[in-house]
Image 1 (cartoon, rainbow, N blue to C red):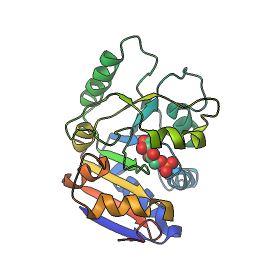
Image 2: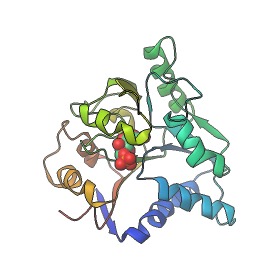
Image 3: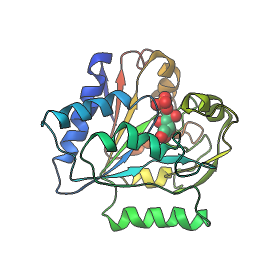
Image 4: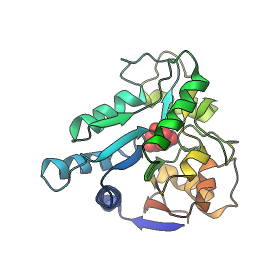
Length: 237
Ligand code: F6R
């Protein structure tokens, strides 16, 4: 496990450097991208590099990490809408995929997503944020280390924070996510956390024993995982 702690001002650029290194290492690169607050600065930095001709993401295939259930395709708060808005539409990525939470047969849709990732050559990089309850994607506390892409019931903490993602009238009940086992098969994993509000869960994730009750801790055993933290998120280490 690699642990990298940087000043808040260097956080986005350091993450972008990691992504850039992977992008330049292969002719075609499959990257799993998260949504949420954590990667926003990273996406802006990628956009800046692309706009200034310092970087091209043309060879990147984007794979969505997770998705809320119950929302129609055109809903702006869908993770797929957010990632299009925050990244894909702003850079030169042309090929991207996500799980359709409106599929008639969700079990088959999840299997199909896994097959697609395999057909395209597997994930080369999975970039992840950490939920306040230790989730990665929607792998909520209790998720198994060998879990695959699947529908999950959302944890109370995830439901509570859903408001900041635009869930105003009601709380979401379920979501769909790449599994911990799926993420462990990724060539590289980059786990991001910034801000003092993440310090407690980061400390559990990195220093406490590995446990499915803090799902992100399960990724510590990955052969090429980097935790990139800003000094605020690393405050309790
Ligand atoms: C989002 C996702 C979630 C978030 C996590 C942290 O696609 O998969 O696991 O990464 O909840 O959210 P933020 O970054 O908003 O603190």
